[in-house]
Length: 75
Length: 384
Image (cartoon, rainbow over all chains, first blue to last red; front, side, top):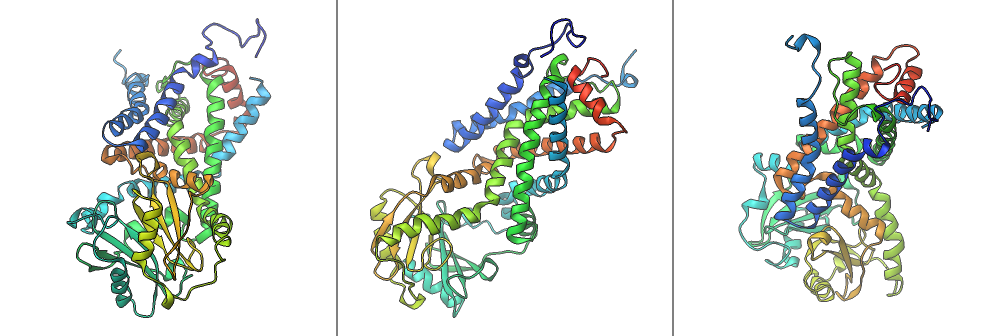
């Protein structure tokens, strides 16, 4: 890591923990879904569908919040 | 992270991605319809699993010896190689071939209804799905093709890991999921690549990793036969070959096997002389009796001549891992909704691969150093 005062050190930097907070949740949810589906039917399958859908949901949310090119913006 | 470290990871990511990309795109595209092979085959009208009434062939029905006779009457001069059971319907399959050690392409797969003993004819084959499966498995190149695709799977895992390492410094100044489509084309693509890649990471690692394991399946089966199976038979008078005409009753063999593993359901029987048995034994493979263990097989070895049990032992850990990896690769274990999610995750993976190709294709001279600076500085830092 760079020392304090380096030009790369400025406000708005996030720690590795924060960068990986949501990805880690999605990672764990996906793995849990993959394994739960294997261990049984019924409720476990439904949980597997739900947990494995979270990555898709994350993409959907990000897409809704995307920054649009200026030509599409109402100004 | 040091600039030199980032540079090294960047180069690892670049090359571990460029090399397998074409193969991975092919695997994703052929894999998509394969996820739905049950549904597609049902549309083609060959879905015996749901069409036949009666008890599952794994539980009972017409005597196994009768079923073998019926099969051999259809293929005169051939020998039985495998018999496989269904857990859901009376469908029973028998594989025959010219010799006990026949190669895969010389085998014939026949369908039967065990409830009535009626033949349903040879398994439909040679369709589009078979073509896709072959392309997906070995690109029609046999074992070398499987190894090549297995190696591409290994590179895919390296690409996923190195991409995740680069994600950390790059995302220091961006919140999760930020898509800067209002900036240059390249920045927009890069953000899509990073978001799609990080959210499918776990799924892609599992599907890529299990695909790689499946590619190395045959050597693992050989190792099991030559190691564990040989050890099981060595203590019981060796494995002198039994000629097909001397095979004893299959029903008696099944009864001995069931007595050794009560409550378990048989999945298939390997006849003597093939890859899944010894030269003198029937190997009856039983499923586990719990949902988690139903993909794990335990073979019971039975003397083909006399029908008495030799040994029944779970397969080694590596082979068990191989069996567990199959459903995790195919995504066919949680009903249609899971298959749909599987297909959508495949589409996301295709998007990661495609944006990756574009990011590399549209690069300009001196790109590596600028990219390294961009990652080192964080996306919105210097030189973004």
